[in-house]
Length: 618
Image (cartoon, rainbow, N blue to C red; front, side):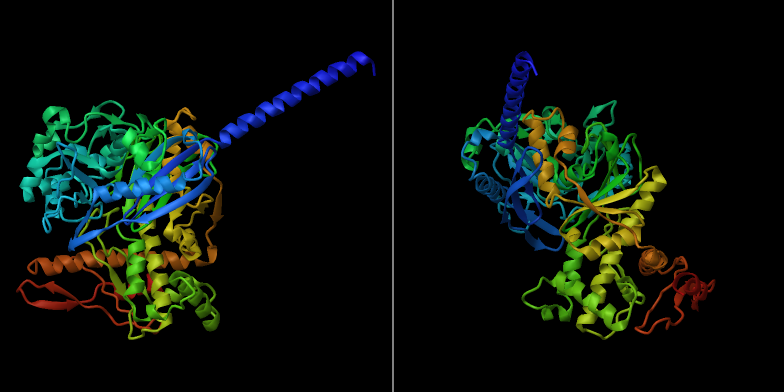
């Protein structure tokens, strides 16, 4: 080889070395870019430090107070929450020596209502205590049932975007309740904010509102043609005074999640231990943050986000899916444009009590105290289920609930019935209070939650959605029984993202977009979301779950018939089957139902019971 060639190759090698060093330095710079995701849940505040690329480094949690002064009343303290936020952020960023490397902070929270006065100080929402520090009506507060019924009676056109009925968990019924029942607080109030927007206000000083919160919970309109508050709606329901000063009390400026709102104020930076160069992102509801991170798992492009149903499982469960075009679905909230994924329409369904229901079923059972001290109660019960299967030679754990059926609406039905008066039901109880009894009841409760999701999917698909995959995150998704039961009952693969805390990751995705490190939140989500583990349906239990699902729907219709019968004895109740199971397989007796004869006397009838048992249970 000639000397000229050797020299050229040496120069090329030097250039390649320089390129490698440059790429290494770029990678190092990327590694040193951090984002903070903050999540305010029902009973705790969490913060996480996340690297560019989505790897979570540190996590810190602080519990917060939930005041429950009366049935259906749930309240919180905004100042307590903010102090917990600052403490969590300071803790997770403690190891970052150069705080300027923390490029953005994103917030998500429950869709709770925060009330402030003209001086931006708390205003009480507590009719029981009158204390100003309790200035938050929580998302799960059900005090505004009459107000929700009143609003729905007007059937205003904006209600088409909330499945036809406003929920008592949304903000306009709560605002109407405050105006009606706490006139002094209503007079003092100058600002009503969703909790996620309160957090961005405290961090940045901006009183802007998130499109996510306003569209999903406040009836703000954004349909691709028009955007704004509908004055006729607020006038119709008696809240026209909120339109004063160009809607100042509920939001004059509405921004998309992940929009840069500016940087941390000097006060907020000091409270969090961060630099004033850290960008603050427009906020998002907690479930929607999890949905954003989850639908991007295993996705390569934005089109892959369609056809996926994300379940964010906590105290309650939110069901989120996006579509290219608007899909109106009775009993399901939405469609909301760009509320979670930019340029996509969001539908949101939900179950009002899921994690809370499982805990309730366990904690109210006499055998709960027998859990070994070295195990979690869930690990113990799932082990008991497997042990019972082996001992009784049962082919699949699902079959243990053949004679035990749970209807799970212990805190009302959010979707698809949109009926907060629905109650829980259990069919097949006996005098057994053993560990076996609790284990099987635990399994039947998980199955019931899966059937509730199945009914939601049926409603979505009948309206125009195509659901090919379910994704899960949250506490219940840590249970292999919960995951597999849903895969079997729904008949589709269930994916659990590798990221252990998708809600926090979703908040960090907003921070990364606000910092300018990605052009938009969708690009950030695709880059920062992780792989997922899939669980596939087991064909051998399909017929069993199909039958159980029919029982689930029959229990639902029976409950409505009971309510009709008890509320108006003069009307003929729609025939219903009342099923009573004993502990012995296939042992049952015919139901009885009251029906009004022409002379007003009551007779006992049986309607199709044998046919039902033949078709459904045998």
